[in-house]
Length: 203
Image (cartoon, rainbow, N blue to C red):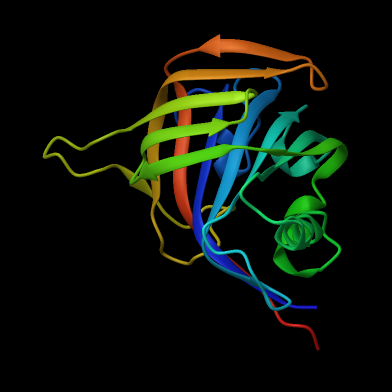
């Protein structure tokens, strides 16, 4: 079993800017409600090409991000065919091992896995994320006094050493999930975009 997936990660949540979870601290408001997505700019899972596809999560984190017990609903890009969807689900369920398994071990409960349209249109912290009818966010990056985009590097969730995470906020963030008991329409909260690389070669 092997995979090589890389691309761009988006995370929008109910924490203030900057989300404490990215440095392993407790969320700002006891728990954290989030939408996450990984867009595969390159991707091969046991010979299955998943380039251009996206996986999203609606997430409820009850406390410190590293304590686990996350509850999630998983959303796989409706543009994936059955073989691609099965391959992506296998990686993000942890059954193919490697670094994604280490991440997914933080999940305590997956309410369901659904196929939905996903829009992932963001660059350097600015853009839009839409996951079916469950989550929608409009993102804007912070900038320095001279106009450079504000970045963060080498966090506990950085998977590409030295790669920047673009720190921003969501001018609009809507997330509605009955299984997770989330119904929010807020603005001005945390949004982060970063590069990711997950690779696992079977022995």
